[in-house]
Image 1: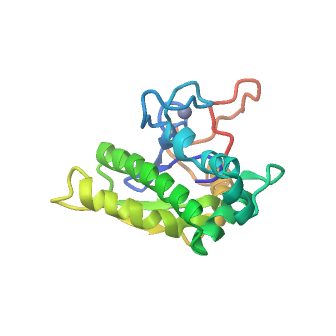
Image 2: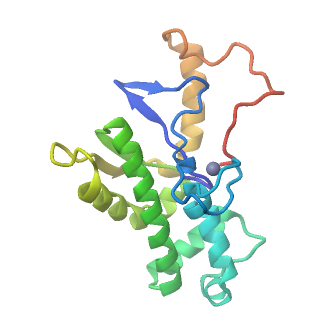
Length: 205
Ligand SMILES: [Zn+2]
């Protein structure tokens, strides 16, 4: 979770890329058929309902909360998400409520992914989890213990990455290194020539 929400899947130790490298778009799991429009063209996506940008937007619209947490439209989403998280830690009720609501949505989407893939473990990473992971971790664990389909056999472990803040840079660097230096099976290499005029559908995160 950065400004948007996505996921990567490791299957038998290898990254599962899907047909076009767009696998794991949990931010676009639909959680409300008639929910708000999402930038992807669908409605009620997790990201539109409960991603950091949506949470910050809702907090900025609440004048009292925005003042108490020091939010401002000129700030970046991550700057204000961090300010909101600090306000929640101080016990500011409006901030706590917004983060708890977001965490419930994220937890349901994680459960959906866990059910589809019968996951063994979930690692929360990215700048927004570095900022507010403590607000999300318990909600995700509770949801999996309460409602994961195969919970009588096993419950996926949930961890907060120690490298959450730098995950995007590390991931990008690892892709380049793996593509150039590691002999991999067909289909796991970056394309020889990246077509810049037709980029894959990607989130703005
Ligand atoms: Zn969407």
